[in-house]
Amino acid sequence: MHTLILGLGNPLRGDDGVGTAVIANLRNHPDLPPDVDLVDGGTAGLETAVLLQSRQKVIIIDAADMDSPPGTWRRFTLAEAQLLKDEAQMRGTLHNVGLAEALALAEVLQIMPQTLIIFGVQPENVDWEEGLST
Image (cartoon, rainbow, N blue to C red):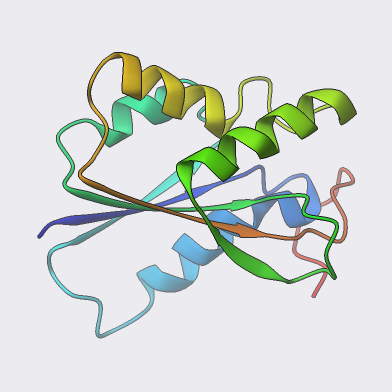
């Protein structure tokens, strides 16, 4: 099964760039299987939906405010990602259009992958600065 690993986030906003940092590190991994595609999605917004098209399995990594200690990571279901979107809208989101909206668009367009895995990582700092906090 061909797999896409998609890292999201803005590396100019501190820990919000965790998804892109994971992709950069994986690119240097010598044992990465040949059927794995790595994509730095940055702040793709709705374009994220297009990246899902024709994929069987997609793993998404992004910063997520979970009110947890910094660096905590968690696997989310599609429904839980929707709840994070609702909470982010109440507080103000880091991206103009977030992951949940892109996934909703992919559902409407019927281009969702067979398997979708979402990992959220709790940021410590999302100020305007480059690099991860820890």
